[in-house]
Length: 207
Image (cartoon, rainbow, N blue to C red):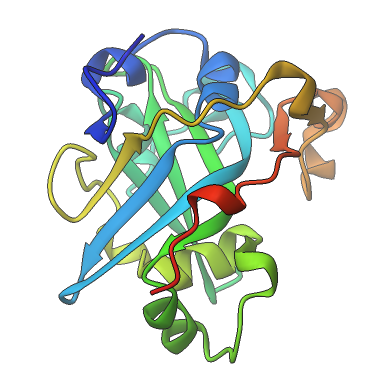
C-alpha cells in the first residue's frame, strides 16, 4: 500500500513509480480534495487517462518537448499539471514518475463527495445528476482547479488526493482508448483510459 491509513494523503512513493498506466488505474476510487478561496470540496475519481511522456505521441511532452506550459510535467511526481484547453477549460493532471520523466494522468471524471453546493455555484448548475462531474473541464471548474494553479504540490493544503479505503475491483474497471487524440496516430488506440463502473452512493455526503 502507498498510504499510512484511511483519510491520509497519498505520499510521494505513490506518485514517483515508473508505471503511469498502473497509477492511472489506482487513482480510481481515490478522493480528489481542494481548499480554494476558503471553500472545501471533494470528489471520488472515476475516470482517468494515462500519458506516458516522451514516447507517447498523445503526450504534451512527446519527444522531450519542454515549453513554459509543459515544464511542470518534468517536475517530480506529486504536482498538479493544469493547462488551458481551447482557451476555455482548465484540465487537471497528476504528474507522476521521477524528475525529468514527464508522465501524467488526466483526471477526466469524478463523483461529488462533499462541497456539492460550492460545486453547483462554480458551475452554474442547479443539480449534479447522480453527483457526476463528467468531463475534465467541468470537473476542474467544480473543484476550483484553475490553470494558474499549475505546478502546485499535491502535498499541501490547496489540492491533494486521499485514500479513503475505497476499493474499485478489477471487474469494475473498463479500459478503453483515450478521447480526442486522433493526432496521435497508433498511440491514439492505446487502452490508457480507465473508467470505474461502480456505485459510490454509500460514500456520498450531501453538503
